[in-house]
Length: 364
Ligand code: PMV
Image (tube, rainbow, N blue to C red; front, top):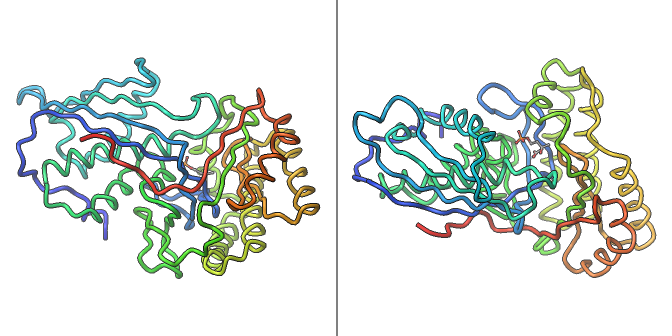
């Protein structure tokens, strides 16, 4: 597929008004995307677990505008958690501008976007992946009403393609349980334009894998991920890092099929620390981890050496820690969280999640 394959044909349906609701989850990368080329093309391939409980639910109402009104500007209202959210408008306008080429009908409708998250807004959990994928899916439902013969495969591919233009990692939230984004030698169908489902059989130990998210710092990040991605241009270690991510994806592909949890832990933790190492070695340099992030990491290493259980951590672009572990070790790990790790969480807060199956249509 090329970008041109995603330009929608002139719609056949006469669609006046309606509403659609999608729920789309967040995802957590195992091999990280950090660095991009123009038009949200990733500098290296990445792979993620799709989450289950951490999700955004978006209802998109649409009403055809009168002929004389359409065509000049994007017309929409926006509610976040039931209240107007003017700060989000510029993000949506930017998103619409990027995707207009692929959805020429956008200016023909007035949209009401009503969106809410299952996790607290100020939790430090990135809502862009779930938010952008939920909106992209709603827009795809509108497009499908205009072009009803569209296949499910194309629907998902284009939803992921559009979500990517909103926020890169959002393209990995449309489907579950594991999604790969970015061309690579292990998965010939993988693309830089959209995410695809992991195409090999997953070893049973990785089914229902758990992700407990420790909320270490719920404040606004000092450096946004778009700034971080840009700092990979001219970064002294960029080329080696991009090569390493490709190698890690290849190794992880084998590990996920073989059920080798020890190797899984080594790759996933190294990826998390490398992501933050890239931040610490860019110019300007910055640190998103907090002292409690490091306390938690040390506690995990101690716990693992004492118990021989398979608990490991990963990080996204922030201070929060994602604890990854197999379902059959849930009791011991949650006990450990309550007894030893909660003390390092802001207001003692953490979220229990697990691998999920991807987005779902709630109402059409
Ligand atoms: O999708 P963005 O632009 O917010 O970037 C996400 C980057 C990481 O979360 C740090 C890594 C990833 O692959 O999700």
